[in-house]
Length: 205
Image 1: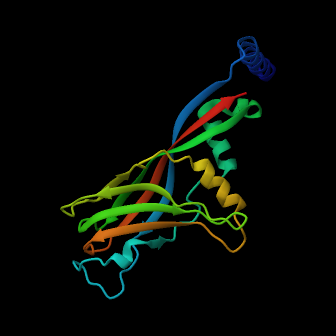
Image 2: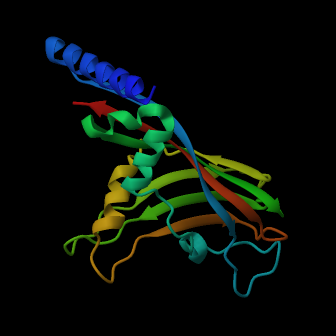
Image 3: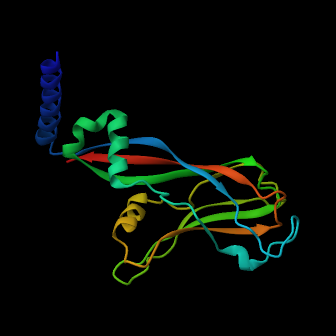
């Protein structure tokens, strides 16, 4: 039975490659994956009380979220889980698009905030620091963002660039997740489950 399965896989692979050669084309396939990022809490606002207006100085706060983006090895695991593992030797990851980021408060809420923006600051590579990457912004003029927030980037974000930056950045220069806030200090400060959804596109070549 195992031999039959191996022969079937080999035959399927040969068929795929034959179609590609005869048609002189490459094939791509996309699929989405949820990625849990764990629990997180809001940074403190020194000197401020709940309900106080948030000064502009707090528009760039570092959020200690380690390992935000999956490594290439983890991405290959997602490809296997999606049923394409047997093609790993003949596919390349073409892109990893950030579809959305989700914040689901289990303590407090985001009410009071009129703006909540997430930015990824890349580390320097060969002495050059790339531009920050906008991951999405939530706005509420009335300060009622509620308990659950979904952030979508204003422009397409290919996480492959961020993944490779994590693996190749200069020693002593580290990437970080930054949030920008406006409005009033929530009461109490929220704690939330953090996750994102990504769209992986692979290409057979």
